[in-house]
Image (cartoon, rainbow, N blue to C red; front, side, top):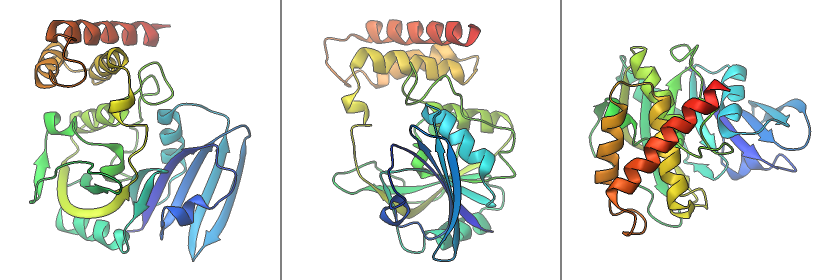
Length: 261
């Protein structure tokens, strides 16, 4: 199965990003900038499709990538990743060993500082665990996710700045797809200002409420309550659990209004 990296980036002025990310497979790069153009070129025997686009929004970029992808296995990528040597073989082998999996989560290590803690053994991922996955950890079988899209009302570049990958995974599970975790490292991540730590607290919780609503689950209010309690130590402690719940409920309602326009 051929592996393809789907990269979302902005304002690149040359094609050096592919080398910086240590991409050694086919790739689709969507560079949101001030022009619309497409170029395909060979990079060390691999097909690179570079799309300059005047569109805006991370989910829009990811959807363009998906629509242009050709590989049987697609990796979701941002421009602050560096892939490890042999990542394609790691991913291919994981799918060979997990025949039921349509989507696999892998380890991504922080380069400058720690990114996440990971389990040491393979495991199946259900609804709640899918909400803790970052987009850069995801590999998926393209034919299995056909018809699914990232919600363009949420994610970086929109009013609601997060959660597009989690909504995508929840809808994947609702479609009947199986998500597994495989404890292999596929890349390193440069920790940047995209971290939640640099998002104002109120905007964070409003965006999280919108993302929960985008999942279209009957338990949305329960999800909001448990998140407010579980994340009560996040940000300034003067922001009470009740206030966090109210912010997420407001975000949920604002998302509904935005979609209804």
